[in-house]
Length: 333
Image (cartoon, rainbow, N blue to C red; front, side, top):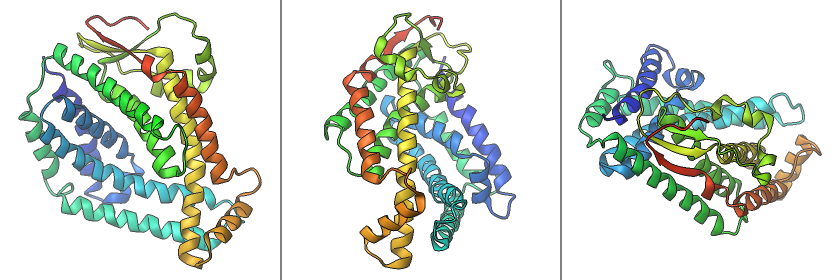
């Protein structure tokens, strides 16, 4: 039995529902942003990334680009809008910074509206989704057992890519977006794949008490609903991940997320002030740190903190121990 089409359809239906509703709104892009269209897009992009490596590379690479364009556009709205809202409560932040961020938000919303029209997402009959379903119907889907073996190989290659990325700079980061944010993206895909695959990825608790993992097993991480795998359903073959190593991955994603958010807030403020004041970068940064207060770590400190947690995590070889392997029987976690 082929599981791939079911996985795509599960998230396509979610996206289709949101787009159908958005098409009836005066501002479809804003509706999609405010109604979390980004989540099914993430899942569809993840599935497309996976299957472009497993089979029909050209077909799934094109599908991935369609989903990625929308997801990136919503992400750009979220970037400026979230920072603007967060800074709006700080009276020390210049009004022109907030106004600039709001203007950028409106610009990104308009761009997404243009993409929706140009790529025929919101036309009558959901033409874009109909074409996607047609493409999926033409794919060379693998049998369940063979697919799981390929997914196991894919996880291995993705992990190798992440390790190579960190080793290329020996955990030294110079740029919040290109280094920290990019590494977090790569790590986060490992978690998103597990959710997108709708039950064929499961966690297994080996029962081994691995001392160095304890620091990652915090209450928020252990109890997070995002760290619970979808029900196995009628899956007969599984990709098993080590539960505690998966939780340590989740901790890393969360920790880098905090550092990334703090850093990109500074980056966005710097962009706003450079565009509106014409001052030097040094003067702009001084103004930013004065507005954010003494508790706000400077960019270089945030980058250093990211280096420290990454060096510890990767030198413990946690990612190398994440995947247990393919299994015909789901082991109880």
